[in-house]
Image (cartoon, rainbow, N blue to C red; front, side, top):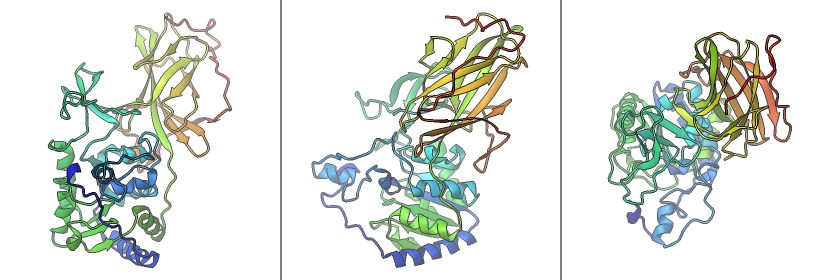
Length: 424
């Protein structure tokens, strides 16, 4: 598809604010009437984050056809989800948006807060890799894409599966390759159920992904709304056609629905677990997880506050030579990947002596003010503890502002004799 882009891109159309407002009102009426809304997104929803589209005047393929390269593109790892991304998150949290189908590989939908069971990333995700043998998925806070040195179809990332030792492959779908079967099946299922499909920022020229909105358009009684600056081959099938940037439309839509567009907060879920050997604790493991238990890599290192040793590779494991008395508090210093300038964060884990102690820490970082907020859930599982985007049974721990550090200490219980003994 890249070599089919013309050197001169199709002109982009921008309807007047008054026209966009009228069409936003019409779209809101459709949203209020519908029972199963799905959204279909393309590269246009990420352009305001600094990520170029493909076929626009400054699109990646357009510039390639002209023999030019982008000089101002933002690293996708550092990009902040746009108002469109965050509006879709709020619609999901309110139960209005039932499913999201995306052609984008930039990872912004998942980072913004779209749940893994509510999205089909038909063309993959730069931050997601999976095991060739057992299918286990991993989300990374780095670019988890193969080098393609030997072939564009060689998806090996060079890492191994922590569960079975199998080869890890990136999730990117290159031209000529089949779409992921499960993601495509779920997308088609929701398209068959949808009575309204909202297309945002897609030219709808790439198949078979573009069959999803087409399925809705051809079904009797279902509606198709398209928001894109350039024409699409499905414009004649649409019930509502808006020539606008997706942000401009979604801001109007959310305002008319009386729903706020939430600011982007980087949310991380950290599981701290004390494993037992016999009657004594032996091993402290620190790991990132997604809402569905998928491993997530977002830490560079973990350090026990009073110990010089820094654990710099996954799994982050601290071994104890002896036992810990119930009530002993271990303070851990977390170093993050830092794609959004996250400062280190100290959290406290209390060993309670009640079998395997597992605590889930819900971490929230605001990239605007540089603040971390941490909450915890006791007796946590790695499954789904979120309902409509609201975490439950939280106990507030601390707030850390960049530059203001909480003293890193370990507090032995009254029954403990000094500090616990850490294995080298």
